[in-house]
Image (tube, rainbow, N blue to C red; front, side, top):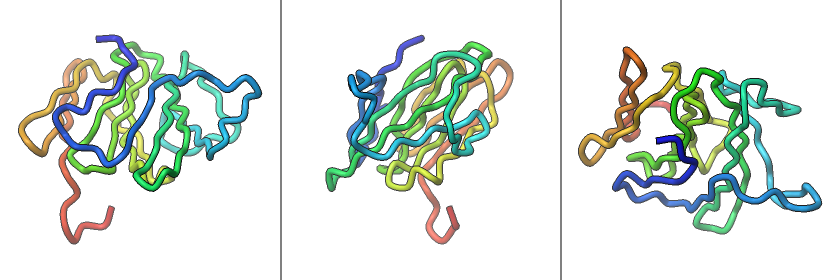
Length: 148
């Protein structure tokens, strides 16, 4: 499963997205661009030292767009973009490195400390399971009253 496509996993995201959109000829995406390092921090300038980054264009219901550049993990694993139980959440995985994204607030993107990711599956109506070589991680919807 080494593809860079979007899989909704049966969830209903509130956004639309495009994996690896064509780079504009003039280099101007005409929307905000955020580059993310493997630790989830924002990179200025962005460089993907460990391989080809995953590029994703997100569009919110109000028409707002932004582009995310996600650094490759460098350890192998899968590539792809996945919806989350939270309608504004997404998981981007580039070469096994996973990022949990709040599409409405890209600065809240965090790296998932399980690498390399080798498998992603939905587990019922409100859970995603990520698998590495010897560990698992689960992602569910936000809990009411818990600061995110």
